[in-house]
Length: 326
Image: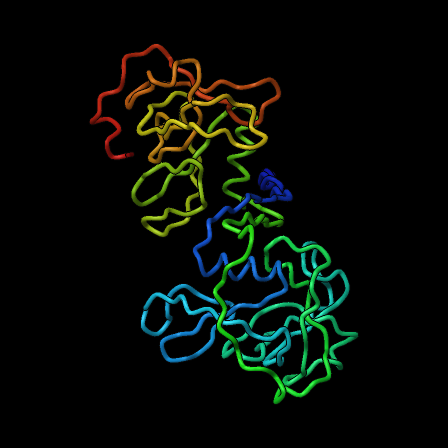
């Protein structure tokens, strides 16, 4: 008589989801960058002269060779020469041109360095190193690198280009700051370990994985112990309660986040876990949150993860019980 061996449980389906990371990057401009971008708005290209006499375009505020402060602005031509290039057959959203174009490094006449931008050309056969080009200015200019719409081929002799001329960098209504939207679109897959973790969260359970060597339980799991470098497969349910180890008070409201400030974000060591995870603390005034506070998860209806953590009413945990998890 033979005994049938039960089939192994199939692994959970690996999760995948589109993910967009987007934020506005805001920076103020010093006198050199302010003059450069304001000049583009006025169809003027400015460079800066180094101590060795080289003209850098785009300009920088400190000499790359000596670190000396640079303020000697000069005006260069809107024509130049392609030093190297790469063809872009499938432009992405937000790139300078919607039709296929070449990325080019252009050394403008009067400059000693090259500027990266797009070249509008009918095909790669029309592009070559040494090609003479000129700036095509944007119809509406605001004081940004996009004021150069692109470069275009231009039949002229570089020997006739004028020498760079000194410029005071003064313009009406100078540009003093810029906001650049940073955006990254990609498909994220959490892998097998975190897939199991996310499936468990959907069942309102928190599951970590134990290292077979050091016995630490990692939540969220990564599939391997970062200390020992050993694969982790032994799943361990932890929590649901835990202890606040450290925290911060958030006073700036995030875009599209319906949470009133100030609020508290904390590292929480769930009972049985060897690593603290982070979560928002609610159900208590922000100025009463403290290290050692005992908390438990609060789930929203149909939520796939805790909405926030609230105090359990237990006495605070002793510092020695969580000091290794700070």
